[in-house]
Length: 120
Image (cartoon, rainbow, N blue to C red; front, side, top):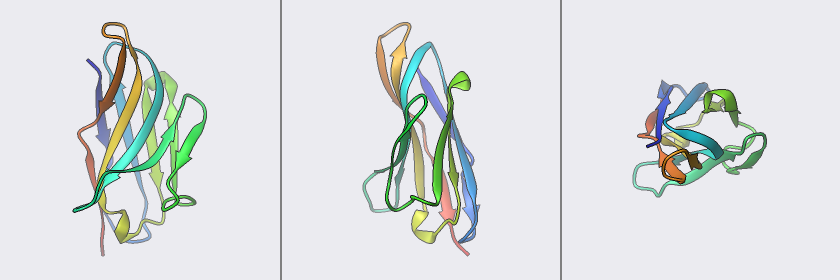
């Protein structure tokens, strides 16, 4: 079984910054894609950014120039650096990982989510 654990959420003022982290653990052979998604109150979950082992796949237009996804392959960890935060960035942020395990083949796992609140 693969587990993803997020950290780094919290309350921040508009214009501020936060850095989210997500560490994957378990019998992991490889992780092909890791990503961040978010879900605001009353809205559907949406993609924020995704990354392969060495290349950013995509970033939502609403966060380009402000958010940067990165990854430490040796630690099976993905990060999301969020700058110039806006109130509309308030949401629960979820980490996702897709890859292979040594036990059950492929996996597609989600973290429990971390709340980011942007408010003065």
